[in-house]
Image (cartoon, rainbow, N blue to C red; front, side, top):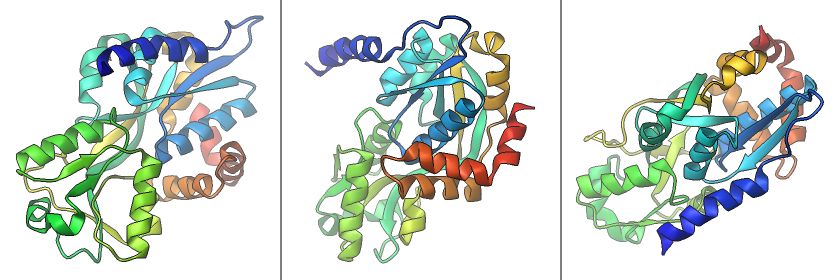
Length: 281
């Protein structure tokens, strides 16, 4: 049932979101995105910067699997949230011959099981003996996310008798805040960069088996052959680079202005204009 629902949904979703054909030489780009805070921040920054240069920017919001399919098919031009070498490996293996990599945005992405600092364990292997304090659960995000598949592997590799709860990033963060405010024990699927580490005193549990990998890169991909037809845009995305300070401040500004992501991104762009404009050179 779920497989057929998913297969039918994807073309409907993107046929509905796909913008009209370009006319009259209008400069236009379709950027796919997922609802993860760093992706929302980077994508809206790209949107306002390119709009400032006269581009019409269409954002297509979906889950990870249909986003990869859309870029491979050409229904979306660009996606700015590819985690490698582990998280999105299944999608890169499947669609790699139909996409091209434009550049690396961030070099120290990390996945992990995250708990508050007050939780008195430090490693994933300790979860099993304390499962009751976590209500037998690890709170996850949307089911199509790479981190969910990897966390299932973690549960298997460590023999954990815990349920991976499907939610969303917003749902996971709400659960984390509620538990944190009450100083209750909670374990969530988490990643860096993320504003959760700025807002709360958290730690990633040590992964002795390295099932969740070490550091990963966050890259930009495009439909295969797109860069040859869009040289200015390709240069911009290939030079799009973020460090912890830059991305952290952008994410916080975006997060503090829900529903006004473009306005927040414009403010941040104005504060860093010289550096960002240099990405076109």
